[in-house]
Length: 241
Image (cartoon, rainbow, N blue to C red; front, side, top):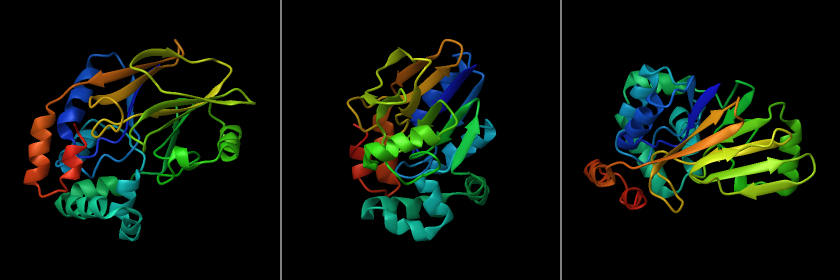
């Protein structure tokens, strides 16, 4: 089983297009999105239409949650809130209906998929969680692997039944230990917040017990122009660099 997992496309259709192109040439069996397909970027509607057309299942991210229930808009900082309101107003009725169907968690292929933190939170950042709560989450998880996004950074957290270990997930191939549980942060397609501005996603190979982290370049300058033209907060353009 080869599964492509991506997260946080954030309305960046140019970046997503490169990811889909790479996935198409990578002999994968299925694809899953970890949410936050919308917001920040200039083409959220195109992103939703693309994942719908390709039948890519997605969990609910915090941005989809706020579009579905405006009470959650107050959870966001002013710039993100402004971006989300503009985004919601530009989404088609079909896209809004599709987003409303996203669930907080998907369990499939023997894995758990959630935007923020297991078992099913789209809001909690993994770095906000205490060591004790992380240990509880690992022990409560029936699945060996849980894939998350939300922080826009690549990270792998391993648990051997006693100790929790943290590592940055590097580009390329990494092997998983069969006797450990993992929470795996797949980074961001549309707005990375680490040392590389490339679009990122992960391919999990169940037979090889490996992760292949892909870094993909795209036309950032074009997306920056689109963000400014759409009247979205400039900081969301600056962050792309």
